[in-house]
Image (cartoon, rainbow, N blue to C red; front, side):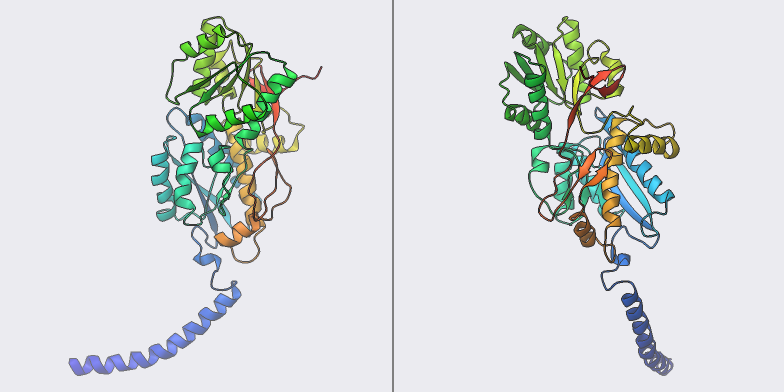
Length: 397
């Protein structure tokens, strides 16, 4: 038996050398034909048939409405897939529920990278969750396109792998402050702001606009009773209140003002005022002024709006074509534009190089331009008004 095994081992060894040479030559030819050693086949999330993106968003809990942004990403991916995909590949999205809890965001992001092997992330929601996600994706150089946050810690620090789409909250805060003073001519302005990076960044913008609030009140994100805050603004004689809050807190605060028959002019961040909340604060939402970068979704004369609405109806039937879905659609537009601009094999580095040179890309939410040293998002915002359960253009006089 020992001699037999030795003799058998010699023949295959000789054959294996020859075979290895042939196989090696074939592999070399394949490598040359596919663009070199860093070919798409070696890139996580990229196969000959698909490119897989991941995201963490709240689909349950107090911020669950923001999870509707997933519908917009999926609708745009489906639209692209229906039109041939990108370089013959279909786009996939793996979307996980982080409940708007940063610790959960971190664990799920690790799953996206280690278990699902996503190529990149898109439309990750929330300031604190995004900051948490960045601790995982940045060291691994995983591109993140369109964090749904304008907070200073996300926007102000340049990161090679992070591509902002939203305007900064400082920009939005300035818009609200200037509109309150220069257009509405309010005399005493109150500010309610969430006591975290989200609310503080918006409030910094209000102050940068030159507004000195008569009363400024921070609140905890978990707070549900705003009766005391409403009383303070009323007692101070504020004729206008700027609300820098998430939807649940906004609704509670508006209803608290209505309960004491306090009716100041109301200005809100885009994150505060969403149509799904109008029915929950019927006496307070109508007539509220709101910052926005997504155009009114009633304006079907806008080709970007029409394509979004038509695609939502076709690819996500029954799902709300909400401003949240419009966020996701806009971020997906940027993510796909970067893919289409890649030169050579699809890798994370080549993707970032392509994104770095996007210029005046037109999206539903506005133009986006990146450079190798600036990944700032959309620069322009405007004011809209809550009317008939929707966000509408402000009538011109």
